[in-house]
Image (cartoon, rainbow, N blue to C red):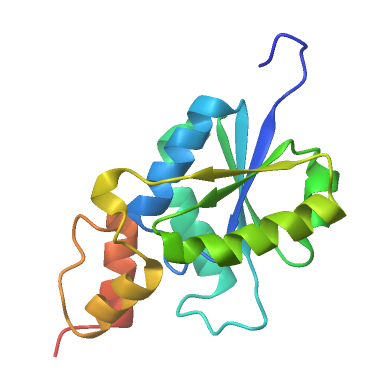
Amino acid sequence: MSTTGIIRRALYPGTFDPVTNGHLSLIERACNLFDEVLVAVAINADKTPLFTPQERLELMRASVAELAEKDQVRIELFDGLLADLIKNKQAVAIIRGLRAVSDFEYEFQMALMNRKLAREAETVFLMPALSWVYLSSSIVKDVSSNRGDVTGLVPEPVAEALLRKFPSR
C-alpha cells in the first residue's frame, strides 16, 4: 500500500483469448509497480473468441492463482466502456502491453481516448520479458489449431484447454 494509505490499483484489460505467458509477464511486472492489479477480462461483441467469457475468466484465475493468493491480483469479467470501469474501481493506471512498434499506434490512440474519458488514470505501457515479445494469443491459437505444441508458451491450464478445443487427429 502507498504511504498515503490509498491503494494504487491498476487495470489490465484484455480479451485474453487465451492468456499467454506474455500476459503473465505483464501482470507480474505490474504487481511490482502497483498495490493491486485488476485483470479485466473483456467481453467484446466485435470479436469472436475461441473461449467463452466464463472459460477465459477461469483460465485467467487458474493462471494467476499464486498472485491472487497474495491479494495482488483480482480478476473480473468486464463489458462496456473502460473509462467507466476505471472510475468504478478507482484505478490510477491502465496497463497496456507493447510487443513491437506496430502495437504502438493503436495503443496510443486508445490511451488518448481513455485520458479524455477518465483523466484520473494514466496509461502505463509495459513490454513483456524479451522471451515473450513475439507471442500473442492469435499465434498460440494458430499453432494449437494446427496441432503444434504450445507447452511453455501458455500456462498449463491453458495448454490443457487448448488440447480440448483442438484434439489430436
